[in-house]
View 1 (cartoon, rainbow, N blue to C red):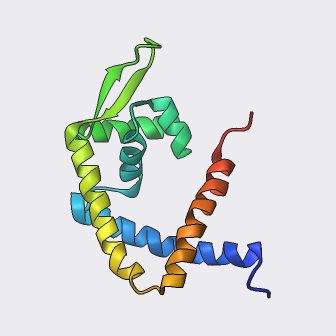
View 2: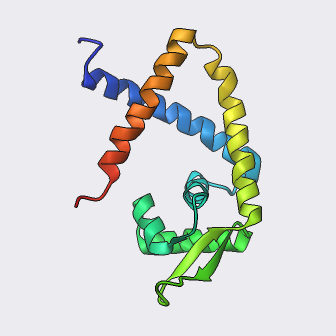
Length: 150
C-alpha cells in the first residue's frame, strides 16, 4: 500500500489517538484524582471560551441532554462550574467555569503539555515541522466535519 494515501493517514491517525488519549487520561486523573474523567475535562475545555447552555454543551459533546445534565451537576457540585440565568432565554441556564474550575483546567492542561514536551523532543526538527503543519490541517478538516449542516 502506498504510504501517501488518505487511507494510510487515517490508519496512522487511528493508531495514535488511543495513545494520546491514554496520556491525557493519566494526566487528568493525576491532577484531579481518580474520580475525574476525560468527559469532565472536555466540558471544562468547552467552557474556557465562555458560558454555554446545557443544550449547546450536549450538542458539542455529542451526548444526550440527560447525560450532559448529570455531568454538569457533578461539576457544579465540585465547584468547577456555576449555573446562571440566560439573559436571552429565561427557560435556559448558562454554565460557566468558576475560578476554581478554570484553575483546575489550566493546571491539568499544563501538566498534559509538560508530559508531552519530552515525548515530542524525541522527534527530529523535520518531524516536528511536519506535526506543526499537519495538526492545524487536521483540525480544520475534522472540525469542518463536526459542524452542523446548513
